[in-house]
Image 1 (cartoon, one colour):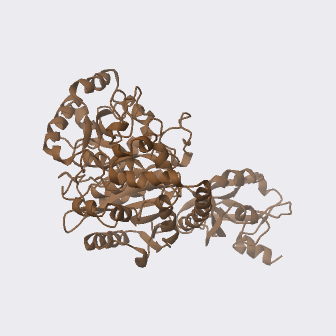
Image 2 (cartoon, helix red, strand yellow; image 1 turned 90 degrees about the vertical axis):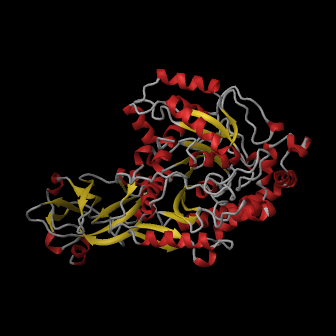
Length: 605
């Protein structure tokens, strides 16, 4: 492939006239011949089937269609109009009249579907060997598994047969294949990508996922694919702080606010005998520690307990429902290992589900509290990459081991991004997963954008190296730092307005030496006013509180005139939102600048 298939590289090649979409598709068709034995595809679009998509580009302006001419692959449990959806089971196959909602949005943006990809049948598995179309082979070493269930989708991107692809994820299928094929894998917050036209494995837990060569591409596709869909009962509207505007790069050079990342204690890590993966993980942490990243241990036990509910609990009943009536009427048509997993799903009682839900809600609280103090949780994406032979010998045990770091995610309603970080001593990719609460997708992608270039890896299985993106600094979005200087200080009469909103005291400090303070007339409660004075100002004692973003508006709305929130300079040179006073409010006020702060003034009264 002459042209690197990143979205940016293709767009530049199209703009310069180096190539055309027709030439790119022809090159992909030729390249496919080299990888026929990898079992990547269930259906490759023919020239006739591709023609409407290529012709459609003639009426689309590349400037207003962000994915113009970009080839993509689709996991074969997601509908593409006029092409059979098989879920890797011919007896189940149907031909949809309409494409899945997300697929249609991508096509409308100019993307070109090139084929339907192989998968673990009915999206049941994390390994890529559970398909009558053959085990999908790893893009780096065909003796190894590619990861599943979105196996073909990941290998297609890694081998340059598509710029990006769609997968699905219930237990890790959008992350494990990314790890094993040196890709970025975005598992969005549940409901942000419509599930209309996607065959569910577990309808209440499933989400569509994106495989890409880097986080910029993942974000570009995500920005087109997301959107509320009232035809999907599980669809959710995105939040303002998680929209495309908030994608960027965390500033690792900011010494005053280092990135804080949760990691798993050594005693809770599992690599299942794979020293290469264990070494790759330790090397990854070493590189991150050399940056301005603070690593703190969290207890992984509650996450693991939640993970075990997925297959040991009643949620397997959803897989049973998704495969009816086939699993009940023609069980012999189902791949044997998949049948053994799904068939018992019809036996669970309603009482089993409610018991599991009670425990799950308790675990959500415990796990959520642990994530509250970090920017994200970091785990190995998988503890080991097995050979195909090893997987076929122990299909249940090894598949369970593949899900140790992934199975909890959707049950706990979390978002995640798989990021490649190492190529091991025996030539296989290794990667980590960044985990956050629901609607933290853009923050996680931003951290991934910062981390990926640190490791100087190729793009997928190609010889092309990832370029270092231009830095775009963003801050944390779930809280807002607020500087207080008067009645809202810790222990004073209005401090409850912060604490009852869940605000946390971040630091006790001073302003830059450019402010004057006045005791305002009126009260109770008595209040000071902070006024900027570059020439006669002084440093004033203040506190900075981290206020939940969702509560910031109501807090500001309750501030009476002449006070308000503006930008205040801090002694360390930073600028934060904080209390300021309109000049007219100084009528009848007493200057107290010389005392250095409000508490000192109160102590002298």
